Structures are given as C-alpha cells and as structure tokens.
Image: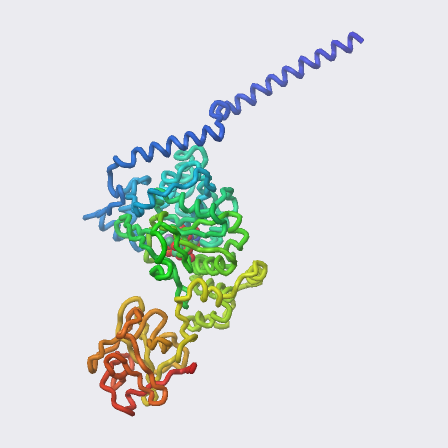
Length: 565
Ligand code: UD2
Ligand code: MN
C-alpha cells in the first residue's frame, strides 16, 4: 500500500513539473500577445484617437496637392509624366508627389453639415477591388476611408487584389498595411486568378462581415462626412441601394474638383451609362440634402445592406472583366423591389481615366457580351433596342443564363416596361409612342439621313448616306409625337435660313426642333421657318440642308421605314 502511495506522489511531481515547463514554454511563445493583448474597446479607442488626431491636423497641412489643389509639373517631371500617361492612363508622377493621406476640401452643401444622424448606425465593410492599380491612388483611397469614417461605423476595409502582378502590390503592400493599421482594420484578400471586376466584387463581398457593404474603385478619395448619410439611409430601409455624389479627381493634375454635380444616372439603348439632370418632378418639393432617386448607377461607388446584396443576387458571375454590371444591378434593384438613390451629402472623388490601365484577356468585347447577358435576362422585348446598336451580337452565345433567369423568377421581379413607366418615364423609346421610325429615305436618290458616325454628345451637322436597309444604327430616326425628328438624345435643329445645314443638337423641346412630316407628299417641313428638308444635289457623306418648299420636288420627298399611324 505504502509503495503504491509513494509511486502515486512521484507521478504527481512528474506531472506538475511537466505542466510547469509546458506553461513556461507557452508563456514564452505568446509573450508578445499577452503583453499587447487588447479588448475590442481598447482597439476602438486607439482607432478613435488616431481618427481624432487626423481631424485635428487636417486644417494645418502643407504639401503638394493638399486640400485637393492641382499639382502642376514642369520640365523633366512633366516629360516623365507624359511618357507614363499611356501606361497608367493618369498622371502618376503628380499622384506620387501628394501625401497618401492628403486633406481634401469639404465640397458638401453647407446644409449637409447641420444634419444630425443617430448615434447608432449600421457598420460598414468597405470593399476596394483592384487589378494592377498604381500604389499612390490605391493607398490614398484606403487612407481617405479610414481617416474620414468615424471608427465606430467602419467595421473593416477589404482590399481585394484581383491577381495583380505589379511587384509592389505583393509583400510591400502587406507590410505597409500591417504597419499602418496594426489593429487589423484593413484586410487584404487575393484571388488566385484574374476574375475581372464583377467577380472580384463578389469575392470581396464574401468574407465581409459588416452590416453594410460599400464598394469603391481603387482610385477614390472619400470626402468629409461621406459615410454617415449612406449608413443612415440603409438604416431607414434595407432595400435602399445608395450612391454618393462622385466628384472628379483630375487625371491630369489630381485636382479634387467639386463638380460632382446634382445629377442622376441614365442609360443609352446601346447600354452605356449616362449622367442626366435630375428630372423636374424630383426637384420640386424637396431640399437639396434629400436623397434623389436614380434610374441607374455608374457602378463603382455604392452602399448596400450586406444581406440584401446577397438576397437580390449580388452580381452576374458570368460577366467578364469590365462593363454592363452597373446597369444590370440598377435594373435588378428597381425591378425586384429595391430603390436606387444618390445621396447629395455623401461625396467621394474618383479619377476618371480615358483608357483602361490593364489588359482584357483574349481581347474580348466584355462590355458587349456582358450587356447582352443583361439585355437577355432583364429587358424583355426592349432588348430589341439594344440589338439595333449591336447587330453584330445577334445570334451570338452570351453564355449560360439559366441561373440569372431563375433568380428573376424566384424574386418575382417586375417587367422592364414597369421599370420604364415608373422609374424612367422620361426615357425616349424610339419605336413606341411615335408617328414613324427607322430609316428616312429619299426615294429618288436612295439616300438616307445618317449621323455619319459622329459623336452624338456634341452638336454636329446631319448627313446623308446610301441607305443601308436597316443594318445601320446611324440611320435610325424617329418622328416623335411632339413633332421632333430625333435620335435617342439629339434632335434635328435649324434656324431655317434658306440653304443652311441642319444640325443634331440635344433635344430641348423648343420650336427650332419641331417638324411636320406629311406622309402623302413626303415633305418634312420645319414648322417655324416653313422650310423643307432637302437633299438637292448633296452627295452621299455630306450634310443635309433646308430650302424653300417646292411642292412635289423629288429632292424634298422622304419616307420613313415604319409608320405607326
Ligand atoms: C465604371 C465604374 C466601375 C465599373 C465600370 C463598369 C465608376 C466610378 N466606375 O468604370 O466601377 O462599374 O464602370 O464595369 O462608377 N478591376 C479589377 N479587375 C479587372 C478590371 C478592373 O479589379 O479585371 C478594378 C479596377 O482596378 C478598379 C475597378 O475594378 O478599381 C473599376 O475599374 P475602372 O476604374 O477601370 O472602371 P471605370 O471607373 O472606368
Ligand atoms: Mn474607376
């Protein structure tokens, strides 16, 4: 018995000694963590201190580009910048001279500063996706977000690297982030193949755990007070999807402008995004600071409730590289019960670049195919108007659409006609509610009105060209119920001097743009001046004119391709 007891106490000594040594080893290995251990509250207070320090220092900064002023380069530097313009698509030399955490002017309307938001707001995961973004604009985006978002509302920043191969975006970026934000608020996630921006956003959203997702391009600067109004509007209704006003940061000199005007989004039937004036009806009875509804978003900058984002089908993962997803999510949000708004008190700068500083693998027309996918899933019979511009895509295979169509079914989304009637009633539909549309042919010469492929965003002289029998979008015109002879946005305009050329100008519903077409005689008469559209001896490829009307003259006869009445 005693022997047994002695053995047992020996065992005890042996076990406690082992435990002691294990304990010491454990302490030794984790000493750093023990001594630096912090509660969430500790971390928040460190972040708050840093946030307040930044705010305090913001009014006394000096250096190039501070407060958003332009950086003007000269001599060698300018030469170097010009040389790099083709590769980077913006002035990287100027950008590199500016502090990564520069101050910007507060360009908000003064009334925005008086708005008091509730103390408790949903927390945001800000997702910044990038593929081979230059170092300084990328980090300036992150600094602006961290420095201008009160820490209690910023849950995390997720940097989603879409398989970049610029060397500095690897371990150097990891080290910079770890050193600058040691508490781990900024996280880096990398894809293992090039995803394109649409799938990259999905990948960035997957690990996010904040209440709200805010997506940003990787060359943005968040302005003062940018985040509260977005979060507040989502708190009011989780189905609100919200865009800040986007101010241009100059690609030439990095000036942070305040030109993020009071606009909303539209689209063209070729499925490009356009900016448009806020319609009259939405201007009335509202304060400047109120949210303003918008038919579409530009794409890069928006806030959405995290769960709602997944509920309404995040993005179409069948879309490649760039383009189309902005209209897809816009139509989908509205048609499936949500609401899209611009928030005038939230301002974010963005460098608008005139080309893409990255490759399109396989040189694919991703905007075309992506747009085809969205037209096929969301636009019902109105997809015909997309194909007027993209005849080349007719019959092409856009990839499998089964899941996206099933999504629309599952969510019981409304029709595209409902969207046009209720969300975007100002949108001109070229072949509906018009007297006539299609080619406008002068039968004796077989010449047709033709834009001659000129840029329709600027005023130009309207031409004529041999008729293309319905295959050219440049020859599609409408004779509207308001008496305009028009394209999607532009109207045939003249002061009516005898022999003067007719121009295509932005439709303004004024008397210079009103015409009367008589189907029987074929004349197209400018009502105010009484002159007639006349092709005279004008050859194909030149501009069309108006002349004194001569009854029955062949050069003044015109026939539309389709008449609706
Ligand atoms: C606009 C949008 C953009 C997107 C696009 C349509 C704004 C301000 N920008 O074009 O967000 O909606 O229209 O598709 O509304 N990127 C990747 N992987 C790629 C390609 C790009 O991660 O394969 C990143 C890129 O680094 C950038 C973002 O996607 O951060 C948007 O690309 P962009 O800046 O070239 O697009 P942008 O502003 O011309
Ligand atoms: Mn961009």
